[in-house]
Amino acid sequence: EADIYQTPRYLVIGTGKKITLECSQTMGHDKMYWYQQDPGMELHLIHYSYGVNSTEKGDLSSESTVSRIRTEHFPLTLESARPSHTSQYLCASSGSRGPNTEAFFGQGTRLTVV
Amino acid sequence: EDQVTQSPEALRLQEGESSSLNCSYTVSGLRGLFWYRQDPGKGPEFLFTLYSAGEEKEKERLKATLTKKESFLHITAPKPEDSATYLCAVNVGGWGAQKLVFGQGTRLTINP
Image (cartoon, rainbow over all chains, first blue to last red; front, side, top):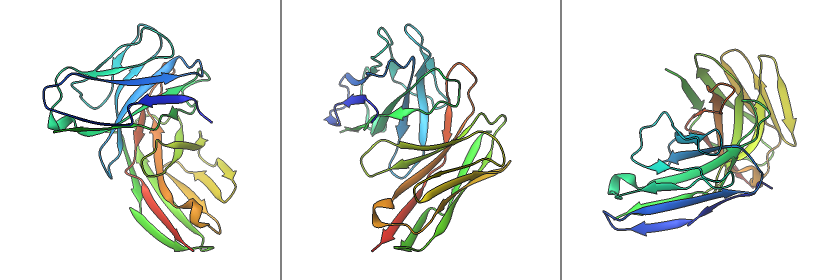
């Protein structure tokens, strides 16, 4: 079973609040990812990281930011939450056996901004 | 533009009734096609990776195949526990990091 954890699982927060979604993995993977998924829709890549101190934006524009100070930790931050940020956020990681190495996903954080 | 289209959007089968799910793709450079299973409220769970046309992989009641423009997920004699959303994704990233483009998924329901 994949060891990648996201907290919180569910978050309801008011507009304008700063939030951080946590993601940790214990597999020693160097590559980590954040995907956004609206209900019934496809996942979209919003951020990824090759390793420590590396972060890149994905194909879907997002107002969130990420950091990668430690291999196992890849938090996502929204400085000022808005209702348009309501979505499910999924964190994933993959190892270094080439681009076709499977990604392991966390359980996701379902964010609701009211 | 890289695009992945899955059909049907939803499929209801009786237990034991075999069928196939389709994933068609148009990408600039395919570096692997992935099938995932997603249960409600959970993250996707990896099933298969296919690298080149003609490749096939099997796991229990599932078999994935790949051609140059599409992939099929065949489900043989399904059971109710196979009910889930099945996601297809293609990797359009390079050797540095995996960048997956996902389809919308097929929501499969197996009735007992």
